[in-house]
Length: 275
Image (cartoon, rainbow, N blue to C red; front, side):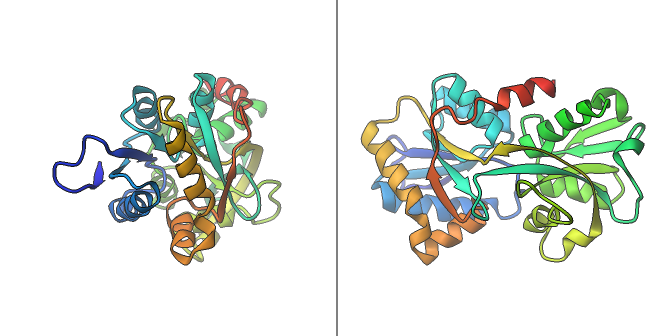
């Protein structure tokens, strides 16, 4: 865990977890920036850690090793089903939901109909846009991923999955993109991960159904005043330049909104369809 804690001050720290999905290259620096912000906002010592997997992120919340986390939708759905409250959710491009795009290498000529016998690179088995949504979509097209693909790899991040396709280690992957996407808007997700201009290196195979955005679940034992302080801090991020930078660099969002109670439960049908 990345600490922002004076020596000997770890006993009463607030612990915040981040997912591994956007890659680890600058994770330490981002974690330190978030720790500094949360420490000022909450008036407590803070530790921010990057989980090794989505499963670890969920277990940290349920066990009390984390007090709150920035969690993908399926983790939020699992948490809600066990009585955990999702405090806020991200808003991207004015929208609180997104979908997934199945993509291949530009010029490959790959289509959904040609996927049998291909290889796939995914983010994580609990990643909604990086596995669950595309897996559920493929089943509606008569393709059972475990049988259709000759191999499937889980890279742990969108960057790793997209690079696997670019480098020829996989034929197809998926990436998050705006809801109700048309034309080439899948490229916005690619470029959020790999940078401007990278969208042209991929071509679209299909769009999936929509899902709610990532959210911030809080541990069940967290004191109410601390929950309120965290909610206020997150909802206020958009009001300062430093907060806007955190929203962009860590949460890939333009602002937070209050998450509707039990707003993620519909994702269980997606999860079950992907088993």
